[in-house]
Length: 249
Image 1: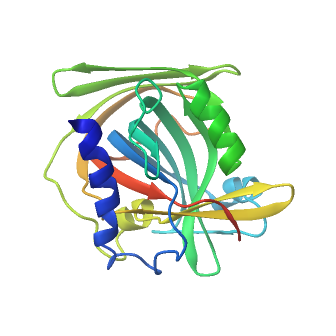
Image 2 (image 1 turned 30 degrees about the vertical axis):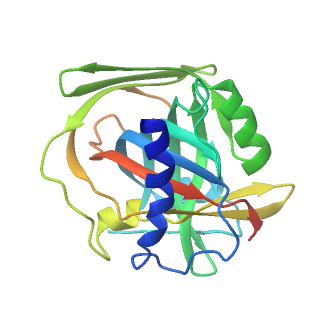
């Protein structure tokens, strides 16, 4: 039954658009996803550390006196092409993203430093269709009561290990808030053959909770983080998403 519910939930996100900073694209979306048990970890970083890692055609964004680097482990379910049901065995996998926040032409979005996924099929498709820096990784997710145990590792010494759980009331980030700046993003940017591209995404406003997170290992970011720096941590139980194809930015 959930296979039938997922497409309805994803498509129904288009019924709520007032929170978007710009109108929906006129052309049709092509992909639906659902993100489960997502942890937002955000670290303050110096802009001069991040700026060389972002293409010149994108403006690095700041909030509360600094640039920000996000690490987001979660589980993808309900991956499907528009008009199709999620396919068994390929529509669900684990993923971990490392990102920062940029804008171009008045459209704030996300720049990904890396995206690790447990599915080789997903990695190859995303690299081909969205030109994103995806990598296959060994990722495990386990539950211990309300706590989620998340482990990710791939070659080159890249690894992440954490235990996290929601720890507070659900809230929606307000306009202008730091939480809104870090999460309410409706496009991604990527670069291919010297050209910048953008893909629009859409979802309902984020429902967040404060998170209790213990980070045992985190070598995923492209710059060294101070182990003493405690990240801002938020949890989201579920977000349904629809995604448009790439277009030149």
